[in-house]
Image 1 (cartoon, one colour):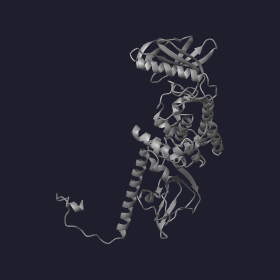
Image 2 (spheres, helix red, strand yellow):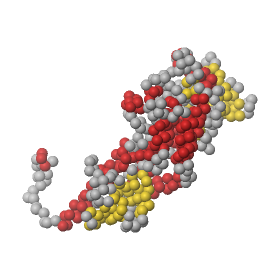
Image 3 (cartoon, rainbow, N blue to C red):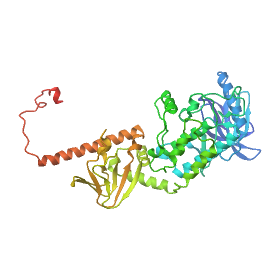
Image 4 (spheres, one colour):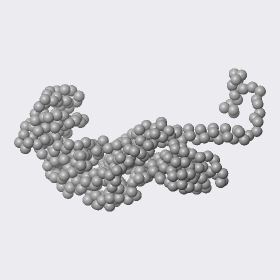
Length: 461
């Protein structure tokens, strides 16, 4: 038997819910408990979402009761392999429970962090199936209104299952009298412009939310980020999202127009339906099939972790570095940077050696863990290259996409600037030592201001 918890309080043991025999708890949400149970009539495992109504908060209980009735009514109309099936919905005086298909998998939110991203071809395959599932829901007159990672379960075969239609909107009802139509429901970061503005919704709001999710699964970040809800809403309504390919240079360029169309603020310019969205995804899906990507990413991560340049980087920051960088395998005597060119390209030597020169004269030679091109990247206005960098042998070079870095997390940008500034200062000190060897004998002062306890004039500080 299992304890039933409500609002953090343990109420009683649960061994059966209706006719269903409870096996174990699957999780707890803000208002409901989810259990794995056995259906004795059909001899199958099911998931049961259970809510207990509170007499202390009658208004909330009425709303929860309505949401449960909505989810049950909507769910039984949906029959698609990528939508969790609803078998039964029971509303009683003190509780309600929803009997659903049990999905032996995990929420998609597990794969949104930068260090846990799925391979690109798997992401496209998952979102492709979600597009078709939402297309099916639309044809049944249903809008989900809360598409987000936690509401999509993934099984071992990468089959997504969209769940939680409790906020679903029934388009086939009278919009003026449908009490399940509640403006503003959903998760803010995934809401469409029309949703945050409390405009009437249709199926295109789900396609927008799915576009946000696709963006996040490919880059490890949301297209719009803010420190408070008001700023987030402003960005969703007024600002364009960054280029997904700028954030992750390893993505095929065909993804940019797809995500831009999914995130269109103008409803008439957005995808008309999920099938159209899926069709465009299929065009780029086969450009990126790479079963070895995860293994290669892990190898790259371990290789960077051994480099002294990245010693201060947190693991999650290092994973982000991998997403915004391109590995270049260069042969001997290839020019990495040319004097006089103007750009902000920089990177780190993973293996091999390069020569840095200006006006045909050698400045230095650099090997593994050394950075090149950092001066133009750090300079606030001047991107003109003052030196040429040429490989001396076969070299493996990690080229950091400077545009993607500017759009990356605050933590990573700060880390890069601190490490790069430290390297520049170290090299400046070394240059000073070299120049000192070529200089004249220095004038010796008679006393030290600080040594005599004197305060230096303000203009010397």
